[in-house]
Length: 93
Image (tube, rainbow, N blue to C red; front, side):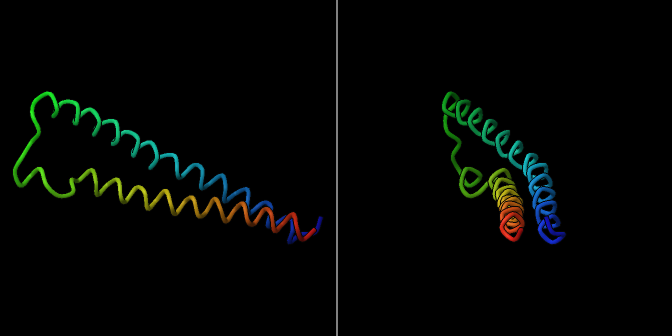
């Protein structure tokens, strides 16, 4: 195995590992926000839906969820790049 091939394989593995570690946090936070929102919806259906200007528009949780999705997409691209680097490294033997 040549040095460029080995370097691409190692770089791909490193990118996959780093991406997998970095994507875990935002995904866990998104799951937690979804659970909190589901709990709040159950409570509001029992209490009566909130109306007025505060009930309309995006909440802070919606904005945070959008930012977390952007991070997930970024790290998914890094993982995809790692996979491509590994495949290229294996192909140029």
